[in-house]
Length: 242
Image 1 (cartoon, rainbow, N blue to C red):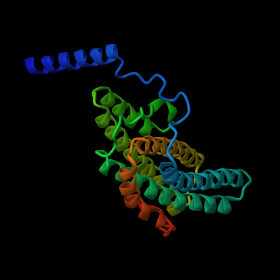
Image 2 (image 1 turned 30 degrees about the vertical axis):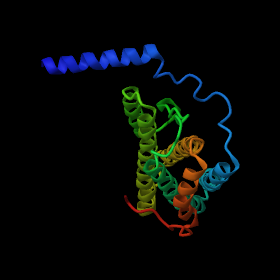
Image 3 (image 1 turned 60 degrees about the vertical axis):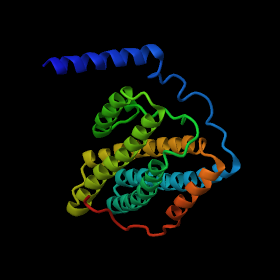
Image 4 (image 1 turned 135 degrees about the vertical axis):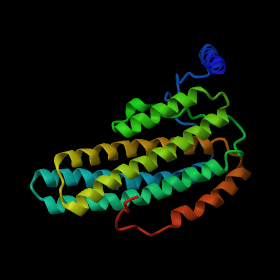
């Protein structure tokens, strides 16, 4: 009991010191334009941002059209558009996951503090994401080292993408298998799509921040590791249950 009380006291003292020193402040983390990248850094960033943003746009437009067709009574065409969204979702989450994995493997390369503060739970709509992000927000307050915090944030983004993919896949597969597609199912698809869009935007911000701290030599090595990711051309026709 004494050890538990002592640990809680240390935790409270640490959090108080962190607040007094301003280490946990997020003020200004979203203010101002992103760091300017050198041409080579910008070229690598643009190659990924264009690909991810294009696929996310396809998902968003397809789902929006699916809702319109459903409301107009064109049920089969509406679900066909959901299938398109599902296939593109699987493709973009593969690119996103590979990119975040590469960042984690190369966290020793940045030569400066990475200017990325992470995301907050209140911007998300799904209960699973809100619960997940609140837990990570708490853990983030316990970390003092910038590199450790960024590592946690990248891990959180990867976990968030996996969680949303699992939830979307479960809902999609239920509608595909049973052809039972009530309004509540469509609402969940809409919410998961909204949150997935936010996760991808935040992941690109973290990617840009990471690139801004790489030397030209480190960038060359990192780019070589990322190059095969965008060459993948396979487009899955459906999602698995997992």
